[in-house]
Length: 276
Length: 124
Image (cartoon, rainbow over all chains, first blue to last red; front, side):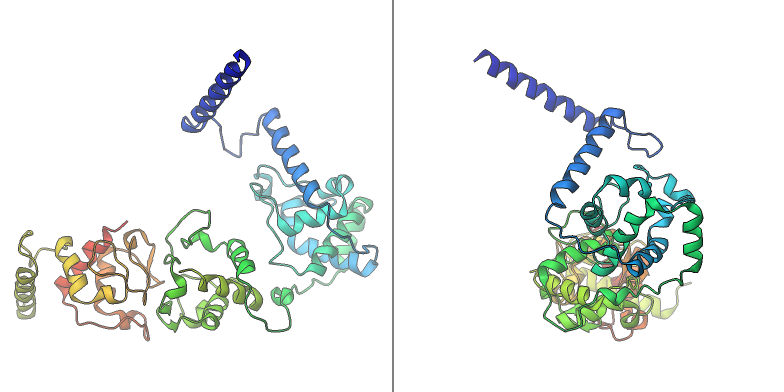
């Protein structure tokens, strides 16, 4: 009985202390101020374990093909080097200001399994600057990057420089992730895509956690809305068209062309259509 | 020296205001829009048929975007920086800003547009 009361008291004190920390703005979120050792350890261990658990079921294909590794290197050069650097290549200045600072991947590749690297690249890491590439690169390219990363610790800076010089910069088609056959939109996938294209940066969308900004109109009730951008009758087909090329439909619109793939546009349109 | 058109417009809108609202401050040539009158006008011009607007009678339309917090929107019609004067201009001549828009020109007077803009700008 007495232990129970003490425990309850301790919980109460902890809750109060946590509340005070939030309310008084005690924790410094400035990126110039590194986390304390304890907080850093806690965040890192949580992240590491979270990835480990979720990457367990990932099936790793063969990653030893030389052409695949070369392709991965080109993709790395195009998409990763600015933040992560490469053997002998520093990250760009802005990336050094990030906290957590982007990892040196020659190091990570030694510590992380292929499945874990793949999972991290594909899904990204919340509250770090690591984006999810799922909606940006097709599956084969995600694996090509993993294949290259596994190779990276074995390459000297000189080798890297030579390889990159030789590589013809890949034209990374943004529509490469597209599925060839037309199929009805997948609303559940579309909802995830809405987060991934950062629609909530400008639109309030019911059920989405985000900044709740009103740069553009709110999208609640979008399924029943008469027109899209005041110009197109609201059908899923027109919505997909608008999402892919707003500047074509309404030149000068504040809504930018975001390189939305046909598949993602169809799925997002399907989801938006469900909003009553 | 106000010209004849302005005088007529002011007279007309004053008459309209008198028929619309029994109370409220006197309106006519004042530069600041009258939000209370604007709220009535949003009903009279039928804006509520297409837009959801908080505080306006029967404003449950879903043809255009909801205007519940239009005052805090960054853009009008996706392209015009949002301010009360710009809102008034848009209300008067939507087709001039965005040819082909589903929002029609409704022959809104200067004073009426200013009043409706004043009400809408306050919605946050």
